[in-house]
Amino acid sequence: MPPKQTIAMVLTSVSLTGLVAGLIGVPIGMAVENVTLSRMGSAIGRNLPPSLSHVFTAGMLLPLLAGGIAIALLPAGWAVRSRTATALRTE
Image (cartoon, rainbow, N blue to C red; front, side):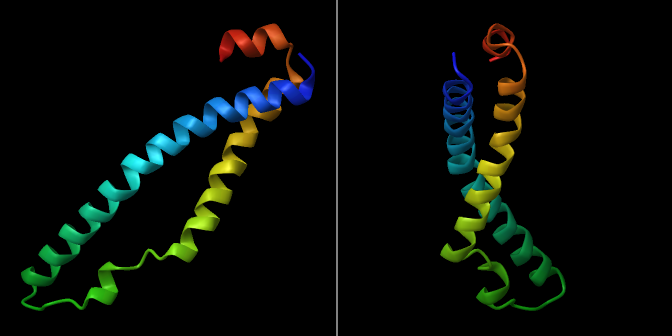
């Protein structure tokens, strides 16, 4: 395989895993944050405003996506520098 095909293969497999993990993890994280903040507020006897728990906006998704792609490039770069057979066995 040429290096470009190796990068494409590794990015495809890592991207799918990251997308599934993000689709599961982000809503769970937001729910846990919401429950934690509401319990902390009630523990001190205050109702916290929604602006404290609604901190994730649509504008934050692009930097998070870019960070995920940057992280995915690390194994892809390793796969290009190694022999193709070794990269495929590791995959």
